[in-house]
Length: 95
Image (cartoon, rainbow, N blue to C red; front, side):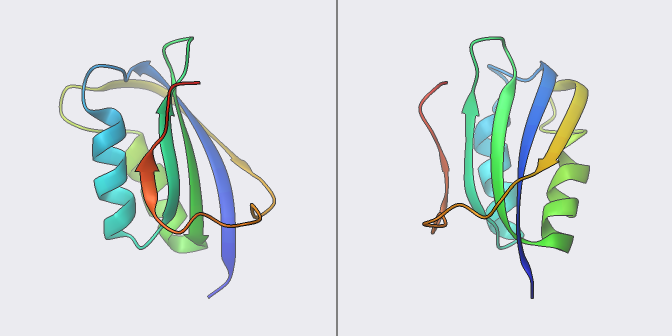
């Protein structure tokens, strides 16, 4: 398994609709580590670390999100593996 890291920026109606908590559940079910946080511009930012196929599955899910979300766009950027790598997947403080 080759470890990868991607940063996602999700825009649309993604705050106040359980997007971060749903992302944590989805990421943990895929075996990913990282975090999700709200951004001041109304978007949600996600760091996903793990297997490339699992990250792609999270990105696919992110386009829909939880039931009340209305996702306009998901931008995924490959980044270097963080050091140290996150151990769990959590909701981080707002950016």
